[in-house]
Length: 588
Image (cartoon, rainbow, N blue to C red):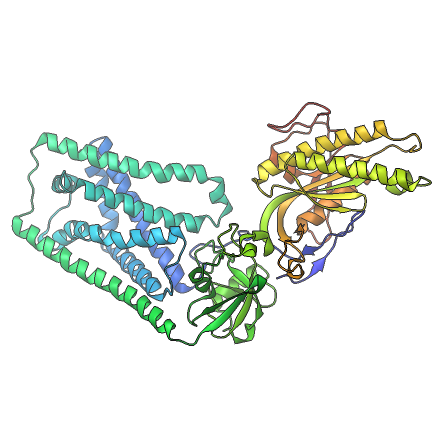
């Protein structure tokens, strides 16, 4: 998985960093320029249809004001979408989106897919049933008989008998679009920062559109002076045309599903291959499906943020055996592998189609116990990439303190320090990774969000300062030098895994963290020597926690291999440290 290993010297440890081990969602490019040409075309056509629906539903919302407002706005709506260019773009987008959706459906080897994909698929299959009569009325009657689909005409036709059906269509179309947009946009950090605004928009717009639709229809009904300009013969033509159109579309749907069925039956009699997963789990499968589809068919947890579209890289695996029999990566897969600096034999499970026996190790597993065996339920068995806060604690001048002391006194002091400090870490929700001589490495934020993890780590620092003061007050007279501790804190993406799990005979080994964040935290702990401080913490931690540290000394350090300097804060005492929702009384 990694290209190289480097270390940053620390006072008492040399943590290992996997080079370029990025967060699985970092630097993702999920826009129209990502994926193969079919994926880009499907996304572009979907965005075109969404733009049409957005303007159409906003037009509906004006019914809250008046039907006249709806009609005035529809002039601009139709000016764009009913012009020769606009109509060509809209029809081309619709035809392209439906065709590619049917093609993608026919390519499936299994319908064991995530709930969101299944929901989007079912909604997409329902949409044509109600949409075809609506399109036939607004476009078909206009083309065939010169009918003008103004709001007074359309609302009178639909209200009240077809109002529920039309409202359901609006909700289904909007939900289908929102699912697609969410699983595209979630690859962007900006989207996560605006998620509450996005949720508000996603809920508010269909509510306003339905409100406007109902209000406009009720007002027209009260007037009772709208004359329909559609004859019975034209309605007969409309229903016949819609039925034929439905038959064609759903005939193509059945053909797509039939192709899936034929593939499934052919696999039942095809030569099987074996796929081996970590822990010795071996399954049999027929060649043809992608590795991601095989995992889903066999109920094996496998991460895939983008739904298997070669955008996010979270389904990546290291091919341990059988890599020579796989086809070379195509352009979209090669681009993703290059972006994440993938090591030798790392491939995307959504793109490779094994035809021979293969052994793989998923690199970004699902954090859930969905597997039937114990190690499949343990996400850390394979490694999890997650943003955490790493803490290093070190006993200053330990060698000098213990010179000419009895072994009993030295061990007693060391055990007191390690026991009380580790208890302080655990009391704030931290995980003690390891003891390294007179040092401690701890991790915060494994089971909570990054903000909470940062606050827990800072509160743990306050507890450890109290431990230091207690040790100094209680030390034996023979220890002449003061008891001083140093702490380094940094936050960033790390790989959390059970290193050495392969040699434990199926038993769980110790959990540890790997990555640049570990090296940086170790370096910050050593910075306490230069600044004669108790705590050295990066701005990343302070900003994430929303903490205030008045009186802290600021500095910038340049880490080996980094171009940009890192801003840090150093403090000799935490009396002025303020952590929101934390323990802000000195000495607590």
